[in-house]
Length: 357
Image (cartoon, rainbow, N blue to C red; front, side, top):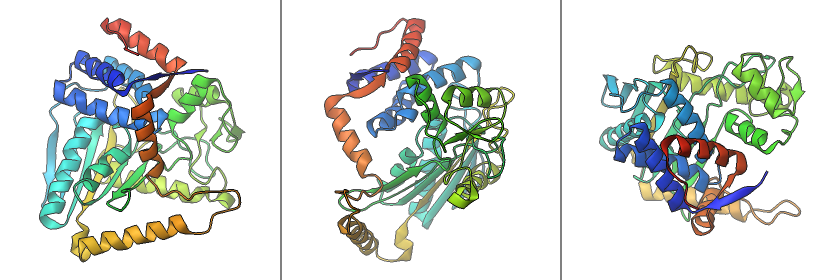
């Protein structure tokens, strides 16, 4: 499996055009593209342009409603519940986090939950929205069931990521992680590369470890059992029950609090039903903001400067690798693998457009 690099501007133009061809207005098309390609710039191939094919299928199937009228169904000074009405997740996500940010600036904290939505890209995008406004940002989402509970062999939770971002120096802090050991997108990437998965990432329909990406995708698509294991692995002795607990926590903050669907019902019966949670906190409610940021930054720098393991030259803080990847890919282009290019080519033929190198 080989890769070909494309200029960011070329991919941006393509995605903007594709989403406008789908029927999204110009502003929304540019926003969806921004979320999508930030994943590629950050080096998160699983959630970047390779997801264009997923959106293509969801929109053609009617699971995503173009230009949906998003509705606020309950609101207080610090909270809100939004019905996305089958909107694409990025549009619902932008509205929800902007509401959370406004509430945090007014009263110190804002919590907005969303139901009846769709895939929203990388969770870190929305946490960063709050961080850029000088706030502590948190975002979570559930998804279709791909993760198996500890001691189980049936997928009951999604990848259920949690993202947290806060201002710090010299780089903002950004932790963005799935509560499954890997995401579905990564299994798809391994399948496209025709590579075996590392043992300990996934289990088959019998609940046994498997390295066969194609088998895992088939079983999940056809409800045959098995799936991805939680953070910590498939066994309690390695801490898998902790990742399982985090996945359930995300279900609580998304599907349960929003009155929507839990992961085992998301993407069933031609309904997406994905649910999200967005939290913005003005940490000035706890003390002097600059002092808090300074204390946090000093602690992170102490970690960077701490003793390294033998043979290791650097300790990273969450968000550093993403910044370095961003700078590299803006200069040198975004690599896209052959099978993703085939999917993009199919979309281009459908709309009679071209991807510029």
